[in-house]
Amino acid sequence: MSNELIQSFRLLQQVAINQISAATAGLSRRNEQEHIMSTAQTAFHSNGVAPSQAGAVACAVPLAGRVLLAAIFLLSGLSKVSAPAMTIGFIQSVGLPFPTLAFGTAVLVELVGGAALVLGYRTRLVAGILAIFSLATAISFHANLADQNQFIHFFKNIAMAGGLLQVVSFGAGRLSLDAKLR
View 1 (cartoon, rainbow, N blue to C red):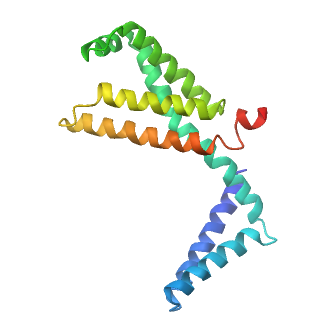
View 2: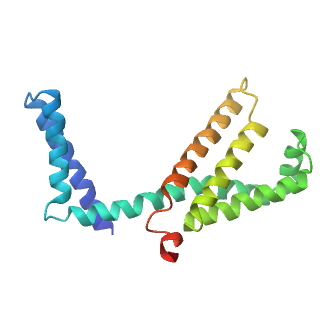
View 3: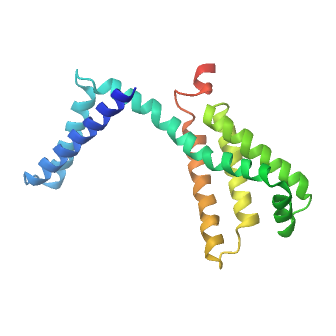
């Protein structure tokens, strides 16, 4: 698969070179765009190796996205497990009821949800739950937008929810348990 990825990058490099060539050839903007699209379509639909490369990238990118999104949940869940008293104290300090229950729920959502996201198991449902969790934690724990650190964490959680909604919309991709179980 690494050879296929290398070939995909070479294909993208060739398209970029063709874009530069078209731009320097003095083509009008519309002709330049048509030339770029034609070059890309020819590259991806020719009898060369591009179709398998495109398939490899189409398989690998959703998996990479899921792993990258899940990393923060898995690390955060492990962090909570390693310091439960501190985490429960923090939950209590923001005034949430039942801090021990909230701790257990957060650990469950982060660890099980993160693992399910990596594996691509019930991905749309899991991504939806993680998106709601991200929004809830942004509002509950990072709402002091006057504090720059909390401001950054608030919008990090909002951005994570946005990425997770993309997963809800487009699914897990081919390298997932969801695809295998269909």
